[in-house]
Length: 387
Image 1 (spheres, rainbow, N blue to C red):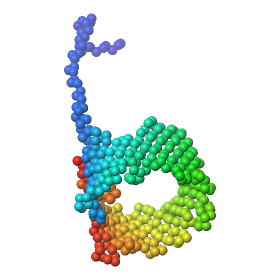
Image 2 (cartoon, one colour; image 1 turned 45 degrees about the vertical axis):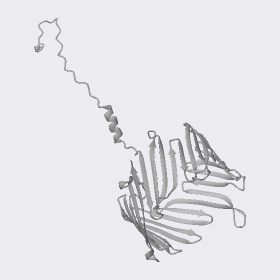
Image 3 (tube, rainbow, N blue to C red; image 1 turned 60 degrees about the vertical axis):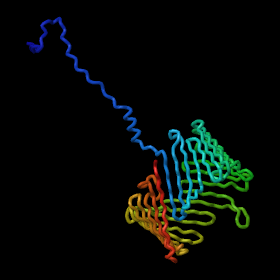
Image 4 (cartoon, rainbow, N blue to C red; image 1 turned 90 degrees about the vertical axis):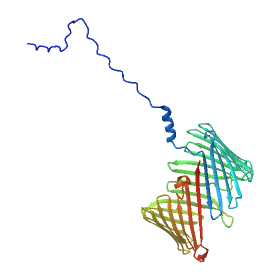
């Protein structure tokens, strides 16, 4: 017998009539999107922006001079204007310089010498770059006038550089394997060189003067150092072969270095671990022996000592640091017979903008051994203001 079906809990009296659809569910409100303006303004406030005006002042008691630098942005931060000058205690201003800098062009103007240095660069394409510098009065600001044109691809690159209308340099590279370089000085001799990559980390360079004065100079570079062979004139004005080179290698948990130059050999060994550094060295044939010893007692305390056996001169330095913003040093140098101590507030090698209160201070005491009464106290202060 078949098992009877269970009765329908909601029977329909009219089998030809469809069941009524379920009532519609209440519509959910549309999702609310955050205010885009609020997000953009918050993001802009969260990203640190460079100050509009920056002023940095520095005073050195040794020279009794103030040095000031002022810079601020122009044209919606597309350009920057810089001003720097010095003044003494009497207020006399000296060495004023003006600068206008953009991404592709800059002008540096020396007010006292009335000289301007113009720099420009242009990326014509991903493989072609143009650079140029023009000094209105040559060598007044310290940079020579030059024009540089470069073109490069994945397998070939060429460049040409002209400096001060007195020298010109051509360079031609075929990938990473072969390189030709030619350097010529007007009214003087030039130089031509060829560099070949023999294997990974191995290079052979042949260079010769133009016009040729002798055999070309050969230089072989390899992972442990380099060796070069060239001709030179001795005391009797005879041309002889000269060999120079440097070798480095691991030896007994340290690094051994041999430097040979102009018939002088310097051997140096450097051993260093987490707490101790020992560096003996000897120069031959002078037989000048010296060594350096450094001991770190803790992450904040370090002692260094140097001694030269040929002159019996020695020096020592003790350093104590508190974080990165406070450093104390004290030392003595027997060669000049001087003891000294210094205190740094702010990172010694850092900038003023990263120091506490954006200010760096250094105090230094010098005590001559032969005349204690002539001891001197010097200080240097550097402060930056962001407006």
